[in-house]
Structures are given as C-alpha cells and as structure tokens.
Figure 1 (tube, rainbow over the protein chains, first blue to last red):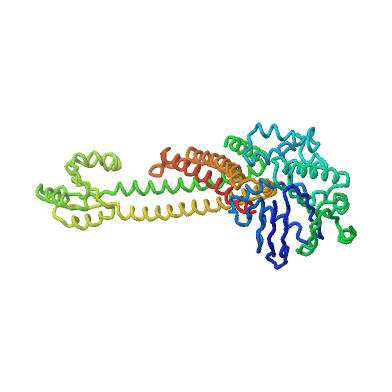
Figure 2 (cartoon, rainbow over the protein chains, first blue to last red):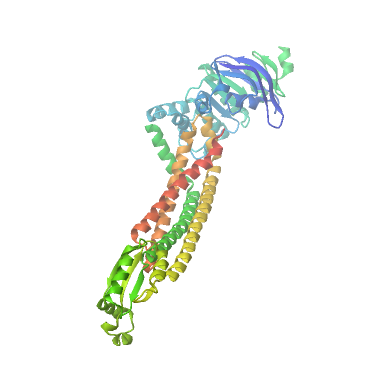
Amino acid sequence: MIKFENVSKTYKNGTPALTNISLDIEKGEFVFLVGASGSGKTTFLRLLLREELPDQGRILEAGRDIGSLPKWRVPYLRRNIGCVFQDFRLLPNKTVFENVAFALEVIGRPRSTVDNQVPQILDLVGLGTKSDNLPSELSGGEQQRVAVARAFVNRPLILLADEPTGNLDPTNSESIMALLERINRTGTTVVMATHDKALVDRMRRRVIELDRGELIRDQVRGVYGVEEGLAI
Amino acid sequence: MRVYLRYAFKETFSNLWRNRMMTIAAVLTVAVSLSLVGGALLLKQSAAQASASWQRGTQVRVWMSSTATPGEVSSVKTQLAQMPIVKSCYYTTQLQDYNEARSTVPIDEFQALKVADMPTSFRCTPTVPTDALTVISTFLHQPGVLTVTAPVQQIREMSHTIRILQVVFLALAGVLLLSASVLILNTIRMAIFTRRREVSVMKLVGATNWFIRVPYITEGFIQGLLGSGVAMLAVWAFHVWYPLHNEFALDAAKVWGTNIVVLVVGAFIGSVGSAVAIRRFLDV
C-alpha cells in the first residue's frame, strides 16, 4: 500500500529530515511511527500527504509514484487518505455534522449520501447525539472523535494520525485508539505517529522508529522503547 | 455539479454573514473609493464635452463693409467656396444681422441702429477650428471686407485649460482606482487571512483549489457589487444635487455610462482581488 524507496528529504535550512528511508507498509497494516521530537515523524506523514516532495527516492501509494503526480491531482490523492492531528483541526464555525459532511461535500457526494453516512459515522464514534453542537462545545476527546469521523467518513485506503492522543487524557486516548483499531479492521491502513509509550506497548503492532531522520528500527509487534524491544 | 453549486451558494452567504464586519469594511472601502473614481470620471467627461462643444462652435465671420459692391461680395463668396479649409459658409443679409443685433447689442445702442447701417457677413465653419487663423489672414485686407473675426484665441486658451483639467481628472481617477484596488485587496486579504486555517483543512480533506476558491471569489464579487452599488448612488446623487451647467452639463446617458464603469470595476476588483488574495493560501 505504501512504499518508500531510498527517500531523503532535507529542509531548506540544511537540516536533514529523513535520510535514505526504505520500507513497505502492506494494506490493512497498523503501524506506529515513534521517535523523539524532530526525528522526522511529521515529515514522514507530510510526504505521504504530498505536502512535501522528497529530494531523493520515490514514494509509492497504491502502486503509484506520488512524486510524479501533477499538482492538480493532489486533492484526489488526499481523498484516499484520512488525517487526524493532535490539534483536531476542525472548522470552528461548522457543527459536528457539518464538519464531517464537509469531507463528503468536498468530493461531490450527493446530499442523500451525506445525510445517510454522516449520522452513521457519528454513531460509530459515539457522537450521534451531538451532531448539532459546535466543536467549541465539545471536550477534547469528543473533538478528536469528530476528527476521526471526518477522516474516515469517505472510507479512505490510508489513515494518517499525527499524535492523535497527544492532547488527550488516558481514557480519551483509549477510546480514540479503540476507534482507530476498529477502522483498521475494516481494511484501512493506519499509520500513527505517537509519543504515547503505554499505548504502543499495549497494542503490540508494527513499530517504525526514526532517529534524526534515520530508520533505526522496524519491528513487527514491537514496543515503544528500544530496550524493551530487544527484551522480547 | 448541483451539489457543488448548492455548497458554493450556501458557503458564500454564510461567509458573508459570519464575517459581516469584514464584509462591511470591504463594501465601504469599495463604495468610498469608487465614488471618488466615478466623480472624477464625471468631471473628466464634462470637461471633454465642454471643450468639444466650444470647438464645434468656432466660426469665422467675414464682415463686408456696408459700402461693398456686389462684385466684391460675390468675389469673397467664390473664394470662400473654393477654400478646402472652409467646411461651410452662409451669407447673412443686413436684415438678419439687424435682427441678431436686437438680442446681442444693449437696448439703447440698438435703438440707434438702422438696417441700412448693418454690415452683411459670411459665417463660415472651418474644417479644423485652428484654420480660422488662415481665413482671417486671407480676407482681412481684401477690398470690401470690413473685418474678419473669430474667437480663436479665447477658444485656444480655454481648450488648453480644459485639456489640462481632463488630464488631471483622468489621472485622479487612475490614482484613486489604484489606491482603491490596493485597499480592497488588502481588506479581502485580511478577511481571508483570518480563515487560512479553514483553507488548510479544506486542502487536507482533498478539496480542489477551485472548490475552495469559488465561494471566496463570489464573496468578493458580491462585496464588490454592493460597494459599487453604493458608489453608483453617490455618483448619481452628485449628478442630481450638484448639477453641472451649460456646456458642462452631462446627460443621464453619460452618468449611467460612468455608473456602469463603476459597477464593472467594483465587481472585477472584488472577484479578482479575492482570487489573488487566496492564491497564497492554496499553495500547500
């Protein structure tokens, strides 16, 4: 589903963000991306979204080299990728329903589909009763669930999550993780950058660790830290 | 397509309402700027019209002395008819001149006049107003000619002043238009800057640039229309309450012409301004 071939990215100020990364992520995998701040996790995700282009190497998504996509095709690429961020990124003046509906409107889904699918997905994330609320009227956990609903409503092939639990308490983090797992079970590939050691250790999924832009560990059913990883 | 049109329509009006302070600011900016532009255009047209009407009115009069023989009169007539620089000529009799004098000469002086005293004259319109000078020099010393007159000098000075005025008004309109564009662009840019986050979210969920752009452009277009609507009223009010007189008076068609320019410019600046302002936020 996702393939990095010798990908390097250096920012304009000369800081290397990623150095010679090669890896494969299969369809339906759940991958944790771990590493200290500045290790290149966010760049990794930005490259997948084609917000950045690699300086060297190729990135293939569903067999297609996304670097060779013309600019006008980029929105169509992003329609196959759901995104969840630490800061939720909801539209503050739209209701919960409208925020989720927006992702469908953008891709030109008819009203009937919107009216049908949005309540379904809001029920799935447990916010069926809050569809008319504004984001500011929700708790952080609830807002993040809206963001997950928006990311998943058009059934993307890939779901990227950049520290989705970073602003949440453990209970809310658990419920977000449960949602992501559920989404993953439908066949969606999930790539999640995180600092949450407890979550990674508990889930035992594939762990990719980056350190100063280099891939230093790629472990099936891994844990957060290197020491524990070696102990298995 | 229908889904999108509905979305764009809804989005445009909810944005206008949600950012109503910014909307008002943009509308007022357009209104004030374009009122000034419209006013300057009106004055420019008025000056141009006056100048043209004066020039059209340039006539050379070849006055024949009352003692001129019929031969001398017909000689002048033939020469005038053969001059290519003279467009048309007609002869006024003593009686016609006498009647005209009735309205142009003070009443007590007029009472002393007799028809037989009146000189006859040829009234000629030169093809080009400045050719009046050639007509003067040709006929001034011919036998039977009393004098040759033309308001050439005055017209030349007046036209010169008017031409300067025209240039000034046009430059004023240009400068005002430029500053209006910058002000409007800035207002729209500020409005969009507050919503750059919204734009980035739209990009994230896969909205195409046109999908994002169109509601902003229609929003700018509507702001431009509203603003220029107000400016049109101002231009019209200027025309009605402070009418220009005589040769300067403009007819309604010219005022409407100016108003159409104001409307088109307003709508253009509004929509293009939005398109330009949003461009930098789309490049993600």
